[in-house]
Length: 307
Ligand code: ASP
Image 1 (cartoon, rainbow, N blue to C red):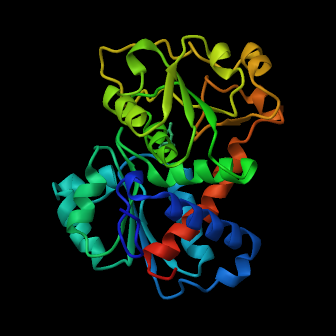
Image 2: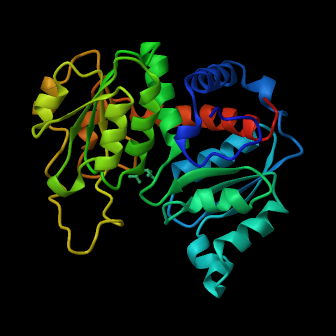
């Protein structure tokens, strides 16, 4: 299944390799020639409907729409400030917003919410994070950074560390990597926060080598990318108390990581990635976030049927 123009994005599974490369090329062109796109989406309206906190995802979707000349309507705290408080169902809200906007970016606390919304919407719904499920646009911008830096995602060795159970960005990025050859994913997580077994099995079945490590330093040797994630404290079951500080990017980790590698993080970062790492030439997370603007502009163009 390829991601066609005007379609919703509920999962990164919709993207095939040609869709990815095409999107990266478009993002590059937007980055190089922003003025050529300044009026591309002038008559259109994006609705951002966010039931969970966000800084980057919501603002970059909104900035992306505005930089295409489009307009934005927004509910940044829909859980508390929309008719959800009055008991309106997500399905009803989406039906209504479909009548106001040409495309909807939805973030919701429940896994599967984007699929439910896409099923009832009359305009494309872009999954901007569905609970512990997926975060497709984040995976696309993550892959875009690696692609720009390395020129390819084939032959990649990537180390995921942190909360691989509830960290949705990891789920989407790992699935995206199945479209590339000879990819190795090393995983380092507190015991109860490992990669979901069904996902690990799917990755293996689809040709990705998954290798668990217990020491982060060991997992960093010869790696091309260190992808650090935050413990998703807001999603953990109440009885689960992982040692959140167990894995941090400390001097030992930096010494083990090759000079050519890059350090990524979907942000927000807390204890796992100290600000002292920012001065390291391998720190790439701010550039990673910046690229999200161009990737989301490319996504909006195609979602609106303009590309
Ligand atoms: N901002 C990312 C997300 O929404 C990562 C995180 O919150 O830790 O999934």
